[in-house]
Length: 411
Image (cartoon, rainbow, N blue to C red):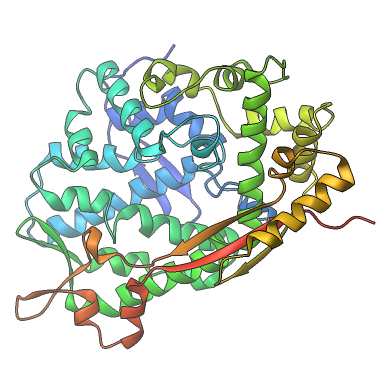
């Protein structure tokens, strides 16, 4: 049973990206030790991207600890530049960044579109933080305000959730390292060194503009080459469909082999209105539950569930085509008809294997709070206006592409 320590126990974690990261105080140490946070060791940071990039086996736990380390550096930089930040505010923002991803389910986003309905990981993260706040006697109250963006000093929330926050600063560099994609290797140290605060808003000093440009370009490249890689898209869609099919069968009375935690979410309708009651069960759910279940389901008598499970476990994925124009309905229908004829399955069953969708990439969204450059004359302007790089403006435009997935022809 977890207990809350009152000591100033500190420890050091050796991170492959930044080196030694010091855990600054007893509360943060105890939060890291808590079962809710330790679960993140069993949640992949990049879902099934390791099916494309074999090195991408790093976890949400590593990312969260990395964010903590970067945030500590950012706070030191700001304080050294004369920004007044109280010890309570420092602790609040460190806890907020540490726990910002605590609500992620198995394989990250796949869970949000399958066995829970209309519940995103940010909402679950907030529920976890509120639960921990009760357990830690109100120690997370300020962290929750910063996380929600209700605290009056905007720059603290911008450090946690903004266009140039410590979350993005860590995951771009970390994901680049573990995938081997050098295009995403941003200069985290310089980004942090260029940060400043004016009128309680986060700004970047003018001499850091080229580093910000590199950051935005790296983000665009990482999305197209890694996060939106066509094989990764197929893999995530497959695991989402595995869980949907499993839930559909469970609701029709079929008993499926799975862990107690996964069984709970397969058998009950869990949405925004009742997820809080299932929070402790959710905290027992991780990637291992899903992988273990799919290994069992590979031999299930249901054609859809078994074939989808085998696709993921054996990495025998669907074919995927990506293009700018939407695919014709007649083309999708043709692929379904071929599948229905070959395996004697219904159109509804065929829809699990033949489907179309869209992906989008917008490296910089200034409408959601842009990246402000503090010029040497004291004026503040958006990075796009401050930059002499004409291509930077194009990064503000959302690029949408269409994809079509369908089975390989086996003969």
